[in-house]
Image (cartoon, rainbow, N blue to C red):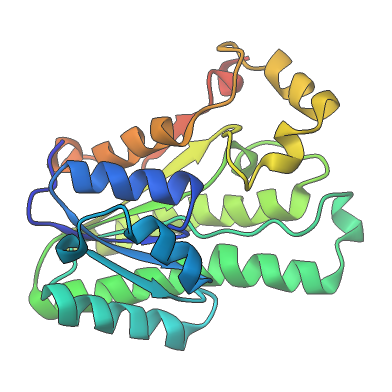
Length: 249
């Protein structure tokens, strides 16, 4: 599970799962490109990491021009890019799916679907220009394959991520580009704080979770490290569920 001399772009890397994946990738020998909406948040993460192996650059992944600039800067600094973790996501609305405001619907689709596609397109363009293999890891959710009451719009976009993963794995295999997906359950992050800090909702989820607790970001990072590394060299188009057993109940 080594990433020696690899360069990995990680979106949504200013905290939570993205930050944990960046730290794990560095520990495995990679250099990392950290992307998120706000530069100060990225700078906080980068300050604790080796500067010669880190590039932190603000990027709105829902804007193709931002994504292209990110990959250009990464290639200029490191010379090559070997992997991508699509992790940046948003979930601005909590409530019945049909009541989702148009602005929240547009924002969720822009970041959770378009952002993943734009970053994947940039990575594939770079890898093909080098005739080099590459690996893509998409962070989805268990809500992408089951009912997501009160989070239906978010779950819908995560279902799209799972579909995107499988189709691109098929289409990109001949270019030696592997595409896989992680579907976490509840993870103790600021992103999930509305659930974590609402006992009625959290307790209902934990009652369906055999392990009886949320995941930590490090536990998702371990799965990402496997999929980014050559340890998973014969794995593509897969959805690795990391949910404490929710899907088995």
